[in-house]
Image (cartoon, rainbow, N blue to C red; front, side):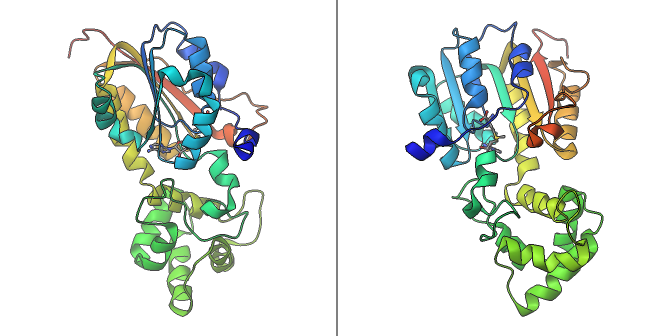
Length: 297
Ligand SMILES: C[S@@+](CC[C@H](N)C(=O)[O-])C[C@H]1O[C@@H](n2cnc3c(N)ncnc32)[C@H](O)[C@@H]1O
């Protein structure tokens, strides 16, 4: 428990998040990416009227930390080890029809990035894993050693927007013929001749991002989770999403805009201040929408 107590996580855009739910009276709230429960604690404090708070995360380690942090609120909290795209099953299990608030704070947690054994970061040498949910079958190692050159190229180009995707894929295929690429440092070493040495941003950043998105089907989960979440939102309910790269933000923006039952509150995304100290938060974009009562379709 001592290690759990020491874990600190700084919720991104916290003040702005609370402001977006300011005018809402909420009974049921669904946090699909609970993490260390930073946003959760703030919303529970700001909205004592919440009767049922559902905290969902794919990462069991995060849920353990969250359950510790949420102890004072456990009377109204249900913790779910699940993918938020399973929102229908989760709500059905709890006998809940609709939520008044839904929130997603996408991507990885700082706990995942700082835990060497999870294999998310090129800062530590560890097995290439990157699974958010340790019950999942496919790891980054399986992809790097098993996918075809064309598949790898596509993953790097689409999910990493990596300019050197073709050469990176070719290099991996050539190197893995001789020796399996097992660890984060193996991968960095293999890619170095193609991507170059250290710049301001680590040269392997985009490849790591691409693999992580692929391993966890992050964009697929977002599309499915948003559609289903909007369907389970009460009339007048609010949905908010924080994203960390353009691929995610594009999905959020278009899904909100094209859904005829929603009014978009944030015409432009809410961004952190220019002098934001939290490095991870700098790329954050938050969008909110409200379910409209009796909107004519
Ligand atoms: C940025 S952290 C959330 C931090 C949290 N808002 C807080 O204040 O502590 C993102 C979390 O979302 C989880 N996650 C990402 N995609 C998910 C998905 N499809 N379903 C459930 N959890 C997911 C990750 O495991 C991670 O713990």
